[in-house]
Image (cartoon, rainbow over all chains, first blue to last red; front, side, top):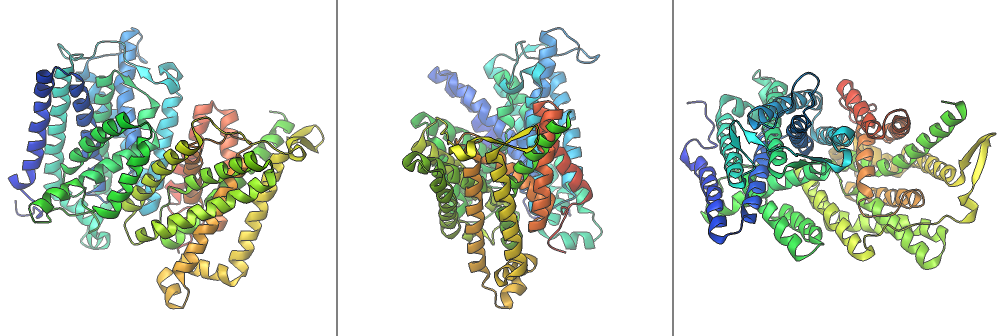
Length: 338
Length: 290
């Protein structure tokens, strides 16, 4: 299509995403070969946070909107799955609806609930910009956090354990390998769909508005509407990631939606590189593995991690995605603000 | 609710409000002048509290602790500003969030390594440990009244310095138009470094004041940081007057939210208020820029 921006149509842009999915798809084979199912658990965590980071980057990298409420939306997605499973397990209807542990129902439910919340948060927050946007999304994150703490019936501060067997239609999803491939399918779909959106007319307007808002308004485009739609799309995807986290670890708690988690998501995104759709997936993988390795060395891993974050911001502007670009001798990535 | 309880809670709210003002004053000016988002401001509060607690443990003097805390805050703040943050003034908000987020993680963990996991306690001298009956039948903790007094005094001092002195004029000029202020001969980087130091000292002071009421522990800075950010945004970034009004508003709404609603819902009250205010006034109550 003629109106596609030079961010890369075709395989050159998509190849890394495909490669990431294939590499991840191979991890269960490695786990089987080594007889270490823990690897699959880690890989599932990587995939779940990769979906969340890819979703966050859709607004950060392409919309120029640094949102600090994504952990909150992520957690709400998890709570939708958890609460529905709780009502299923306790055979107690939720209002008038029966509970369910079927992900065919609860994941779309999570997507809808989080999408609606994102629309409300976005409609209010996007009236502001810059630091105001950052702070108001941070406040919304805390609102969700305290909201989850207030759910005394569902564990309150201690979190909500999913006691029932999670299924997907007729399939039992307590099988770790099967669940991993379900999550991976969502990651592949998220990267594919968001990649398409970024390259579409809509994505072009969104990116243009983050570069030069005045000019976009001058040609008759209302950035607010584009940003709101982008925020909702991002929210739906991050809500699905949260739903997968809850279903995968059979547990969700307010800790998963604290404001520091939102910070972690931003770190993952930037670590991977905000210039590409797939970069944040790498960042999430690096973050999860780094957290695991550092915390196995020392209980004070956050000191090393904090210093590392500082070094990365001071030094590496384009994230991990830039390392590849540097290795191939070209700077193919772009950052939101140039 | 009886009127004596109402008065007591109102005082609590105002006292919490002036405490938040100590935190927000530095934050809002740093925001307003350098357009810099300092998420690590809460760490300076924590550093102040720990410096105060350590000083009291070493010397037994509460007064020395109150002197040491703002000093420690200022030293740490200036070191961060000169060593790290000043490189980020021209960078975008995303980088500012990241560098200060990394700083929080590192400082929290470093404090944990030095002081361990157990919260420290600060003891009040006998003169401040009692209660006074301000209104007959309403005994109120003396120390909370002291906090109230200190907070109001600092607010008055800041007001005089910013509205009535040459330095204050530079600060206001920098806040409303940095390039023009710079062109008119104001040494903006110098004013800013000084301002950052003062803001850090106030955060340290707030930390040591909170010490005897809350426990001194790692991570104590973040909840108050988030409230201070709420205050800053409601008041209008860069506006001291806005920060003062918003701090009292947040302090009172938070205090009453917690007694009238369930604790967790009460925690949400101020965030709902913020969303409501920003929905109608996206730049806060007292916007500093136009």
